[in-house]
Amino acid sequence: MNRKIVQNTLYILLLVFLLTATNMANAEESNTEKAGEILHVLIPAIAYGTTFYLHDKEGRNQFYQSFFINLGVTYGLKLSINKERPDGSDNNSFPSRHTSATFQGAAFIQKRYGWKYAIPAYIGAIFVGYGRVHADKHYVEDVLAGAAIGFVSSYCFTTPFKGVSVTPIADNGTYSLTISKKW
Image (tube, rainbow, N blue to C red; front, side):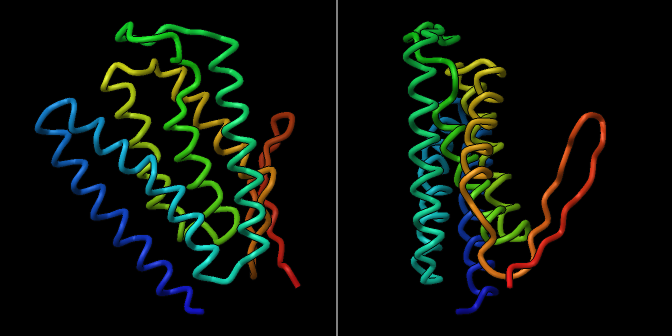
């Protein structure tokens, strides 16, 4: 198991797709949406696939938990809120499923394997949210809610793989970091 290989693979895959997405975004609106569709699948797939590459059965189970909680909460809110999309195509605007899925994958990578592996995934997730607003599929608040649901679903069910974990804490106006080591 070589963490450097995993890190480089994540960076290369996401860099290629981000460069492709950036070029497509300049061409026309529908290409931005297509790039978001690719990243919407790619980021959670990389998070899930990494558990196989690292033979991380515990992480795979944690991914399942966070993935299905994220899916349930997102669809539950979509069905109960019935908010019309900006383009008027249907009433499934809130929250953004694409954004919740990509942030769930990015947060899983960050919490399980560390920040240095998650940075490209978070950049991709932000692009997906931007693309959903840019394509008139969601309002900004839909994307922000999706990002929060995805992040929280992974953060609650995921523990660090091996090594050191750095966790930000905000409580009653107090901000700090907790550093922990799994023995």
